[in-house]
Image (cartoon, rainbow, N blue to C red):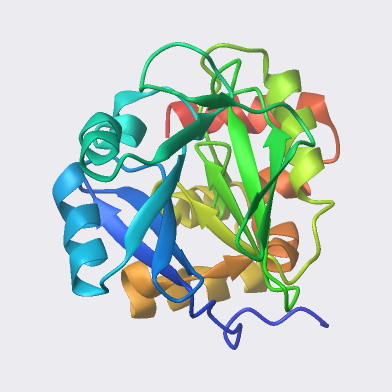
Length: 245
């Protein structure tokens, strides 16, 4: 086994902010005193982090338009006069529309937009790489630790194709999902696989670490049942079963 998850190095520039029960917002510090955030579901938790760390908010990235991912956008924009970046044109005060494969440069960070329709038609993931080649992908409701998002506005085949884009990222890329459904996703996987050492290990790590649990693209490829599906048809069947789990 060449992929190790329990010893992955956490990106010291990324702060994970739990909001609204099971949502995650991410704060990425750059140039010492500046930051961008991804999917601010509410104002206060993000604002508290910015104040505590004495950071200036310059950009907001939105993965999709559901309220639990944009609830704090308008107030943060008013407070910090920051630029809002997203893959759709209406709502949440989007200032800059990005397309698939577009790159946004912020300080020494390059943020690659990856169009990932499935959960919504305009879902967008963001792969951020710093000057030292440390990578993190902010996956919204497309890819979770051990799972994937529900398919609302597209066909399962579309979500499958989007996930195939994400698994092409470098294996050491830190996976930053929009929700903490980790325990449920691994428990579901074990109802299908019955016994899988990697899934069992992942579940145990999560139960030990809780919201401190982190994963990489390489680990998801061997532990995430939806990424282990051999084709779109098998994926669709798994997603259907998970919807009623």
